[in-house]
Length: 302
Length: 229
Image (tube, each protein chain N blue to C red):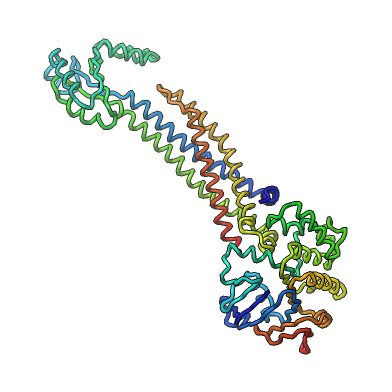
């Protein structure tokens, strides 16, 4: 095995069709970084979902002086006995982890704290506008909300049941949609990259047809004949990947920046980035290597 | 060394076979001329020996190997024992004389020390002393063919196939080429040379095999090119 010879041939091959090599590197870089961004997005969505899901609660609002439901209008504000009854019913449900009673005053205080930046909004809400409530933490925010809501709705003293995750559902749909769009574009670009690799190798094989003809004639093994081309494809893929690593680091910075717009931070770790970078490298090398190999089998017959 | 047993080769989409039931033997160390008009099957004969083509029918043995049983990945090993020279030289224009010859050894993974030793030897053998650093386009046709012969011979093949090696070269220079082939033959290498050059065949007085329409019509030891041409 003569590494120096093989790399000399590779260098000649890459230099001879420089434009194709550059085009290949660019396309591999863009498709890998888009794919990587898609993967980072998946991770970001999962992180965010996990973080928010852990904070999701059911809010069971009790009847007060200006209720929403006709039931409360008839029966009037919830009595102490009704409140106790609701609490014990909730605690008996298997899906419920924790039940906290929030008085009207406590809810108002929390409301004022969360919207402290908007004094006009705060002023528009008077004491007594927000009813007392039970904050219920569920075992599984997604599946348990339905049964618990069904069990508690209609009990005397219960006005309405609010579910935080119904607000989040739309947001998740948005995130998932964005992620899918990135992945679809990445897949289209990867197909383009595969075709470009095949074309580059074919061109390279054509450029070096004299050399390969002589190699075959003097009895060079297939491995020896094909290796320079294979390495050529892989090196182009590797350079594309290196560019993609830079772009991915940028994409992570972008996603981190996006976090500032949300109340809960769910930043990706450096480990996440490394993982995605390694996955894209594996995909890139596999893609370039396999395509080169298959192209060679077609164009460099013994 | 080369043994053909009722070999027939028909190319796809052609009704007439390029070679038809050819039986012949070439012994080790022989010098054989292969003559016949264009399309008589000379090139097909050489391609079959190299296993660039497979026969439609019959058996071929080269250097003791049954080519029908040779797997694809063993073909390179066969070709290492066969040297080839062509009418159009087939040198690499970007490499000088030394590099062109060394290339044949590099691609079969020979160590550099070995290459440094044998390439100058073979350059001397073909009569190109001191021209190792010339580029092919700085050489005459005859000199280029000498480089091609050096490349074909540098790995000491058992068989040398020459497909009209003097086809692009003037008669005076051809004599020099033939001397080199003769020198190679004297080292024990079997030489098979396809040619149209009557003067050369007549002057060498070696075995002559004549092909016509894919059939062997004449096989003479110490023969001449033939009256018909």
